[in-house]
Length: 410
View (tube, rainbow, N blue to C red):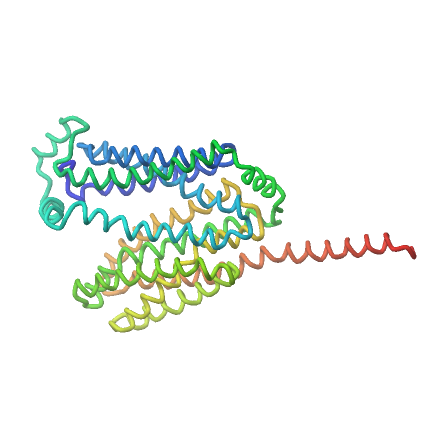
């Protein structure tokens, strides 16, 4: 639409990631001083406007700016959604947190299908695949830069795909604005109860460790999902169809287990789910490294790896809420760790893989990340429970003293 090939538009992903980081920081600040429903509604309206504008962008710079603004709203929404669930349900919000993150996976599965139906196979092959293999024409790019900023897209199906998604997002924002004007007493009660949540003795240390935990976890998840196709074709010798199936089974088991985690969260503690996820990811990544040439092992281990990674992020947020209060700034800090892992790990792996073509660097990075997350969680658990055990002993001791003082014999 902007007369550029995809390889020359990599700034879009950088701009969106930078916007997401900025939105996470901004959302963490605003959620502590603004109504949650109002801020979420405004963010969704901003996303709607951005989705409507994307098909009309005729210059690459304008497209990058619009995507960066959408990234800001994504950061605010991601931070706000987690904070809102913790604010309303508190310690009992684990199933709701799993449902929220399952909706991310469900949307990521449905949105490309919608775009596929809107664009069609013929249009996609002719107008969007060929330019990737051709150098951008100097005359074409100069004409695009000198042309108007906005204009109708050449393919109107592109417009309808974004308009449909934008309309859906706007409908969700209407419900959030309705909740804001309703002024529900539930939110006031949740705020009052949130103020009563205790603060762990090692609050900042726990947040820093969880920052690192999500850095390694999200980095490994995005890295494997991004490079598994290339790894399977170049290193494991699979055909493209088989490699695509390997990629699909990773994200398929990931989405399916996020859905199942909603029910598991009703009977399992978040800490238990994290331990099980760590065991599964560590074992599967180890098997991937040891048997990286075996197609059967790749299929099985990839399925287990996707299933093991599914519930870790929402379980981590639910787990930390059991031991210390999480406000907007704390949630933003944690999410920034995941966002940095999403940006840094794939870039580092790509550079190292280019230097060592014969080594499965992608699998090594997943194994290293699994080791770090497996080591970090016991440390976090120790920091979180030591003050808790001490506080419980003090509470029991004070209750015994009060009981003795109130005894008739004394």
